[in-house]
Image 1 (cartoon, rainbow, N blue to C red):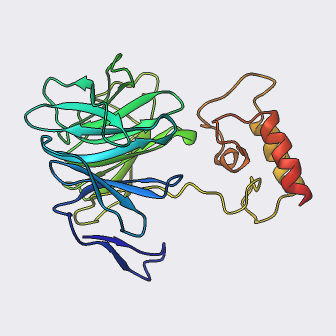
Image 2 (cartoon, rainbow, N blue to C red; image 1 turned 180 degrees about the horizontal axis):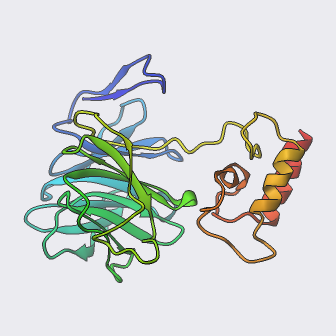
Image 3 (cartoon, one colour; image 1 turned 90 degrees about the vertical axis):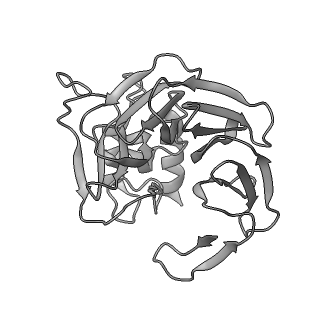
Length: 274
């Protein structure tokens, strides 16, 4: 059974009640108004109102998560015992191909950085790793500071990854890049954000900006925001990705390309004049 609710927890609706057995993971295609999920050994999708349930791929090993690359028309999922691999296919379920075969760790959660063409995953709750979307350059990111991590999501523009850990009952985060002098088994940037959560499983981030162009979050687009734009502007000195220096840059990145440039300057002038 899948449910929908407002962001404040009100107005709970039941969307899908059939063909849903132990649903794990859900991913949204906003453009085509579809939701995708895994049912232990199969992948399904439906309209956002729960209608038109379509089984896409069946007979898979045990699955726990699914993510979409809508622009490329692909979905990615992790298969645990016995295959230990990450696979992808077209959004209609055709064209299945292996991305990465893992030696030991079950990929229990996966996330995509589409700007950098990277896939991140949690391995057996014990490690966080990443690789290129072609499966090359597998890299260890966190190898000894996890107890039982289960779900992972990224804030690419701020260079952060977030995960839930059900043994420590926490939501934690760290940088996408290992700090200088640190190693995957000894990272100084891991933060406990929320503790005492019981069994935190899924996690998602609301990264929308209430007022585009409002760099200082005062609900107005004015000269103070122009000052923020000047600090964030990277066109003259080359792109700066991710925005590790100012969260205000996110709401000034109108085209969401991870870079403040002339296109964003033009969009800011339009917002300021409206």
